[in-house]
Image (cartoon, rainbow, N blue to C red; front, side):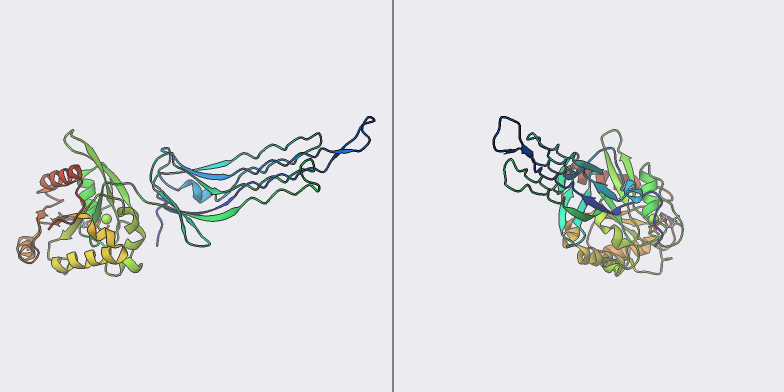
Length: 332
Ligand SMILES: Nc1nc2c(ncn2[C@@H]2O[C@H](COP(=O)(O)OP(=O)(O)OP(=O)(O)O)[C@@H](O)[C@H]2O)c(=O)[nH]1
Ligand SMILES: [Mg+2]
């Protein structure tokens, strides 16, 4: 798969916390003391590695160029009971919506949803004790290290789903400020695109255009699976169905198979409110197809054409109202 040059939504990084400084072995003596006194100070603690979400970042692009991060080691203790300085923590900034996983176990460390959320990912090693507190001074403990997978989920309110070539990118380009490439072949869209829709001064919402889904998307076929996680967080899905006869597919089975894919990927995705849109209504045969569709599927469907803009406003209004209501169940 050809990766987009700018949108990086997955990265692996190696982090290492600072090691603790060594405790000091030292004896104090002067001409007044008969027995030398142990005065070795303790080592400082190593710094932690912390991952924090920041509003200044939108992608994981920075991690393409830099993968290794290390916190500072603690300084060694010294004579005259001097404790070594603690190592500085290392803070790594990521965009909100980043999921952290431990590569060695595959386990989720944290799903960072909010801004300025902090996660301690590796703990600095403790400084070793000096001989002022323990007979034989200790070495500092090694700082923890980990390989972490960062995955970015887009934070959008509305996700646009459907088969390839049904007009998803045409739709986002038509309703928002996004410029998503439109072309008459499948898998034109190779990575997610976000767009902001302003609705008559009464508010705005963010839509995400993702690559087309096909049967088997949930198990990695085509490009869709890579991107299904981006719509997990949306409040609403707009399911675009091609009503024209040119694709050679049947709109009813398109609806079923995409919904099946969603369910196979993640059951919760099936539960999201879906608004159905019948696109390409300007083309011949679409009206007949829509009638057949309506006879079989007893759900509300919005007939639209991204070419003539027919029905787009009604659909936008419906999206806006649904978002305002914050409904989450599939409409009957
Ligand atoms: N006649 C007509 N053509 C349309 C309409 N909407 C989209 N198209 C055409 O359908 C083709 C595919 O449109 P895209 O918007 O790229 O489709 P997509 O769903 O984003 O496709 P992928 O990114 O490949 O999944 C393009 O040639 C569009 O011009 C419509 O309402 N009417
Ligand atoms: Mg597209």
